[in-house]
Length: 140
Image 1 (cartoon, helix red, strand yellow):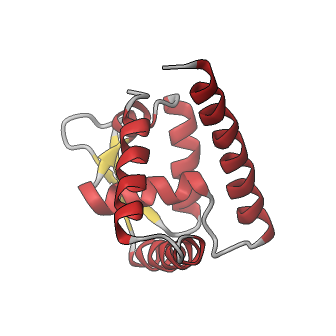
Image 2 (cartoon, helix red, strand yellow):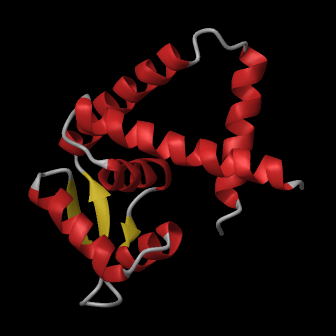
């Protein structure tokens, strides 16, 4: 790959991250931050999960996921299920309130993305989504 293409990717990613962060702060939607959204979405899609598994999936420290999980539990979005085999371990499960917050937040995000790509063709949206997924999977 040529240097010019790599530099374009690097710059556009920096701009994307800046703009998405700025939009999240300036247009505060719901009660979820990025980490809360990802944790809750993961649990809805794949079911109750332990802190260790979440840490591995998100490539974070167990202590970080534990802290984030505790904050979500405090808000009433998650609850703990004790692990029958290991008395110290537990699984995190989403509550009905957590599902509602996740749904509302996701809908707001989808509405904003719809606005941003309203002039794009269906094919462009599909390609962009596939390329973003491929790029994100490169981090594993």
